[in-house]
Image (cartoon, rainbow, N blue to C red):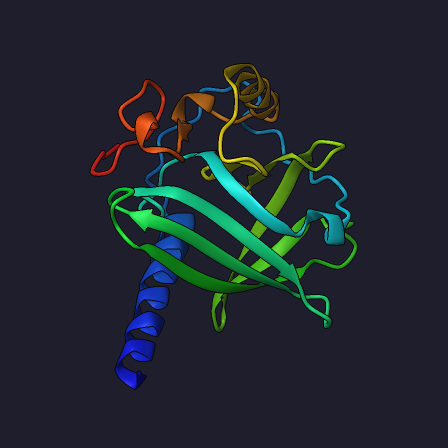
Length: 203
């Protein structure tokens, strides 16, 4: 059991280091969006309502989440006001076992719940921005300063094309290069479909 626990900790650190390296990377392609320099703005969030399971519908690919399918986030509000943040996904395909990575988030004071500091591992934190959440708390958009990373989440594992295009249009208005987004397969039949990422794919 102790050996398994150490392996789990090591895997978490590897994922965390990958994300930290990606956020700090300066080799991202230039953003052609004419609004690229416009700063991102967060929206206020009802934290208790925002908690729960969110499926990753699309993201800007980066190597910490690359090759994952069926991925989702699970958020739980703690009594101390911080958030237990769990990433779950299957690396390499739906026939592979689920992996779980745990993080701890803190809400930035004065942000109305829309800005979180995600602790990858002590003492490394990154900033996560809630850029949009619909009135029914069914869909949300997350981003990072610099617009090199972004996510579309949904309470449901699948999303129709019209809704997906409308959320991409919002990201375009925010100054994102929406051509970089790839949909994440949530069912085996989505693998290989246009616009979806595939395990083993490289940018």
